Image 1 (cartoon, rainbow over the protein chains, first blue to last red):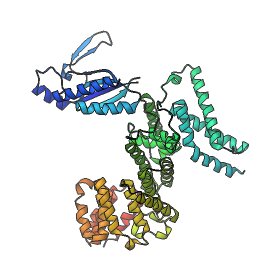
Image 2: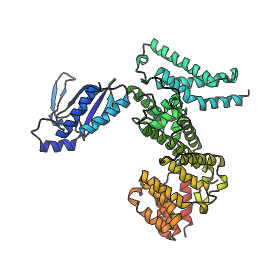
Image 3: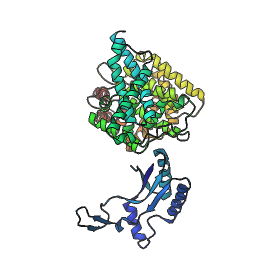
Image 4: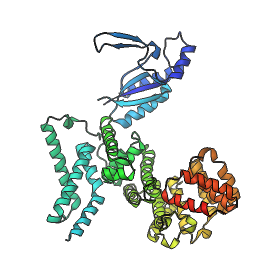
Length: 121
Length: 410
């Protein structure tokens, strides 16, 4: 059974980051957070829970495409302005929700952000 | 056997066997929805057949067999339709078979699944009443004053989430057990309080069906987890509260406060049972949790022949102990009520006034202030506090009591 663990970042923090580290293309996490995330990822791999993970660049770097009617409309920016954004995600393998929630609890600590757990169909 | 006897046998079987049937079918078919529907059909068949055929010698076995057949029928029907349902994920249970013991009762698995923290509290309550308590959806909807369709949706959504997100069907591991048990107890206490302090303009002041159901389910959890101190504590707390139920509301539907209750009308058997449980926990010499302390406070109250006979210093000491576990303003308010008896209303009022920031929206805060101000002869301030309490109170008996008290002020 696979679960998506979405990392929820808030817009204020992203705005703060944009002001301070506009040139930094490393991502939104601090070096300490990155180290904790790396350690957590190693554990996921060692325990057989790892499927995939990735951090995302700031929402302002997003581009929206709408090609439902074949027009291929391209728009700059995130598709919806919101207080919270997806900052990254894990896809984990877990036998049931209790295990997934435990891992997500550790993940939230490691990346220092809220996370949301959703099962894949 | 007369019709009445058969009716009683069916009611009894429903009380005793519903959770067991649902739990064992859930285990076998890995699907709460199938288990619930098949159990309901089996009981409906019993209602049809038992009056004519007689009550079977082993009603539980009969019902389980009937429900199993209904479940298999449904699965066959759906697989004929090529329904994907049959291939749906089974609720997972990867545990190796454990030695049979109280803790391994299937009904406990069912309860922990229904009270899983990934479900909203109101959902846990509804699901527990349906799956473990066997209440019908219309009954649960009435109990919580919501539309039947709303309640139906709430329960259906929960079943879908349990299946899709794979909420496990098992008793939590030892390390998670205390937190998860307290989650189950929170659900049961909420059901009890909704009965005891029923809210809503049209609602009866005390809804006995809910207090009785909460006690019944807590008794079940107590049988399943006899070593758990908080389970015993919650059961004792409920019994000692329920014992005063009839004395707590007057014939005219007005709240009767503890000091004015006819103690002879208290239920002596429930009090004796509650006291026994409290003594058992004291003898265990393990630091008590909040339900055990609340039960002990109620044991002090129910041990007193009248309000003057109450050991208030003991009550205050217990509230101090409780406040160390849970520094909530509501506990501080209740402590202040006991302090009023021990050190006088002036001291209590000072403590209560400290809580204004946190409790200004809570009717009991204003009712307590009103009473203390009345005892201090400050009628005008008391009246204003009664007005505020009446405005915020949701329970009809309480409103009637507060109104009379206000109108008696000079």
